[in-house]
Length: 379
Image (cartoon, rainbow, N blue to C red; front, side, top):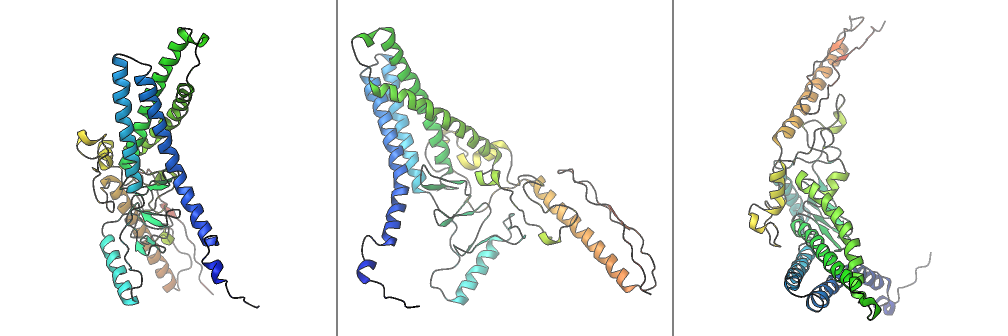
């Protein structure tokens, strides 16, 4: 096949496929950010200026102006903090351009640092590793294909921010949802009051109603209901110490027994033994919001830990270890029986195999206790 040389003029042209793709990606990430902030700014203008100052009076004006201005500043601040601290992942174990020996040394060093601390594993039971970022993944870290990086304690990729929600910005995300719900409530009542007053005074006979009031009333209902439902789900995950990914997918836990060797019970996972990171709703809340109640609802950094290790539930962790120990004992007993049966040529019929196993206190699962086996002598 004849290969034609690439046109250097087209390669450097701003209309090249690479440039067009980069422009589309930049526009797709910039549009939702501009849209959300413009919508917040417009709503704040209508609430504070058009309704609070021009339409209301007395104590109502003071409440609407102060609350509307304050919650607008908090909402915009938390939004920018979410974008600012998005997509932060573990330090790469392999430096780009490094030689093979240094890469292997760094990889083993990173693995040795995470091995005694982590409790999560891949589906095959091995330690989690990201082949794209070239780093060992700490617990609850996942790779985002959209952002192109691993994110510590990744919750989900949010299109409204064009960013990932993870360990470093999860608190700001929760606060932003709370601020928006509060902003929608105030906007709904303030716009509803002026609309009812306009109708009650029969002003529609002489004057036109402000379309900003009508749009604010409708938008506050739509976004208020939608964000309130999503906030309720996020608070449930917060008090349960789960991320959105962990709620949607089963998380595999490390065990002394390889996944391929499990025969009598399921490998330990969030489905079989429970959430190992659930340490009680109070501590779960403090893991994200911090210990100081005065800073819980302020957009300041107060999350506990470093995003690579997390407190674990002792009962669930012991259940994982006990289940793996029982599985290893049963496999060892079975292997010993097979070895003895293979070495004995005078036995015509093997006796039944009795493998004792106690009921799991936390899962209620009882493994196989009685497994008959027959062997015939080769004549």
